[in-house]
Amino acid sequence: MKKLITIALLFVVVQAEAQTVGQKMANTVMTLWKDSFAIKPGRPAGWSYDQGVILKGFEGLWYRTGDPVYFNYIQKGMDFYVDNNGNIKGYKPTEYNIDHINNGKLLLLLYRVTGKEKYWKAASLLRDQLRTHPRTSQGGFWHKKVYPSQMWLDGLYMGQPFYAEYSYLAQDDTAFNDIVKQFILMERNSIDTKTGLLYHGWDESKQQKWADPQTGKSPNFWGRSMGWYAMALVDVLDYFPKDHPQRRELVAILNRLSAAVLRVQDPKNGLWYDVLDKRGAKGNYVEASASSMFVYALAKGARKGYLPQSIMKQVKKGYDAILKEFIKTENGQTNLHGTVSVSGLGGNPYRDGSYEYYLSEPVIINDPKGIGAFLLASNEMEMLSTLNAGRGKTILLDNYFNHETRKDVTGKTIDWHYTWNDMSNGGFSLMGSLFEQHGAKTETLKEAPTAENLARASVYIIVDPDSDKESPKPNYMQPQHAQEIYNWVKSGGVLAIFLNDSINTEFKNFNQLPEKFGIHFNQNARNMVKDNKYEQGAFVIPSGNPIFKTAKKVYIKELSTLKLSKPARSVLSEGGDNIIAVAKVGKGTVFAVGDPWLYNEYVDGRKLPLEYENFKAANDLVKWLIKQTKK
Image (cartoon, rainbow, N blue to C red; front, side):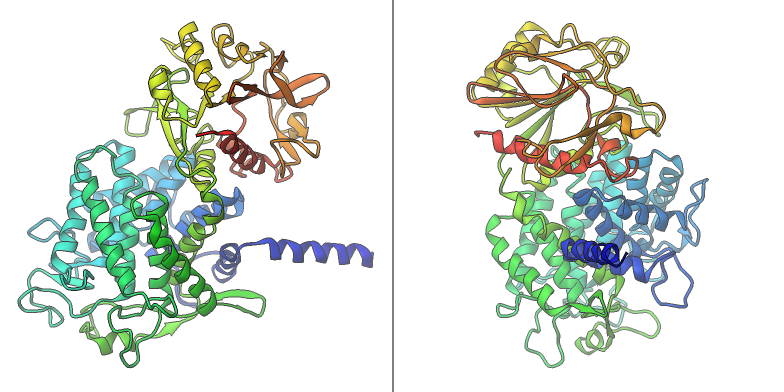
């Protein structure tokens, strides 16, 4: 018995040691805020933007690990406030507080993943606030109703990323003109032309005591406020239309901001100060939340290609300094030191924006804004070891042979089922994220494959081609399509085919393509799982598998088996059936499996028991596919 206890304890220790610092910090969060979110112990929980910052960090952890504990924590946190009718407990839209918009990003995530309409309804309440939110004469959102005529840098993060994602989902293209305007106005009205830094706030009326009587600008550059603005820029760009004429302006603002921020980074310790431009002034100090926000925004900007890779040396120095200066293991818990609790302008008691004021606010341990910013930064920085693998490579997902559509919650027609953007059970958003975590770019091919449009792809993925049951006018595989794809593979392309079982896909026409590589999809259905008897869909992967080097047991249900001839060979077989195959043709490679398999439902950890390592299998496959690419 003692031996078993010792083994169990060793397992727990090994598990803890295997966790990244981001995961350890998430454990702290789930310890501090188990059931609901109260910023200060003893106070009732309230609808607070602080919680949203943390939960965005949890979203990144979920996408990087496939561990459902992170998603479940997000859902539990939001369900504390959102009832089945989409009402938000404690939310008062007529307060016109732009801070209250921030948590809407998590409502959109939950809607996109679960499809539950209550989350969309709740998010729509927040969107409706923006329709009537008071504005400056130029059209900039006031920070709050109680702060009339004022724009603060903080407000750009609180409102605009949500506004952009909601508009993307609602197909409201005109809203993006309004979104970009907020950033332009904030920069124009708060920038210091000598340093490129942005002042914390701007008062159009110039009536506030903190406002310069000529410019309306506040008197100092507060670190976290510029951090909010920087994070807002990189997050908005995730949803900003690529063909929008002002997208380039957002990228230009980010580049100007990046240059200014990097100039005030301490060259010795790598960190940023609470008041950014007063590094040597008495009482000023390095601050955790601002440093984390800058690391996140700059690293993400470089990863996405908005900022030059050359900045990463300074970014890495900043992150290493955060770990050294602010992260402490105390009593078995990972804590974040060095975050200023709050800083604002005006109000009662009055905050005059002076240097002395900023230094007067308390610096605390495990402030939620600081933890959230650190989680975002760690998610970016913990990806660095894998980014070079796929850098410069494009993963092209077919949306021609598989082209299913449906009506969304707004009644508009959207593409769905095995698409990158679909976060629901049938989407490929999680595998798309894995490709991006390995530095590759994901795109979609809506047209028939040709030599010209395949030329930009390193990997081309075809999933579950439509039958006449799924589409009134399915695009069947034609001889010319198969030949174009064959020529592309032979010249070095990597083709991945995820078919389906005999009931759910089209075989007769499509088999023209895989047969060119010695692979024939049998029109059958294996592993017909009844109810939740998951073992009926289990495959054990033998050690030494050339593709799946970490996944040992996976789940694949209702699949078609494969008939193989040269040059194809099986890489997973069971009971005389070929389950997964590869083929080398010319300079290229083909991967084939008879099921869509690695879509969200069987990768994201929310449904399958954790003994089935489909997330690991997806990660293994992503690495292998990228490794096969020659260009």
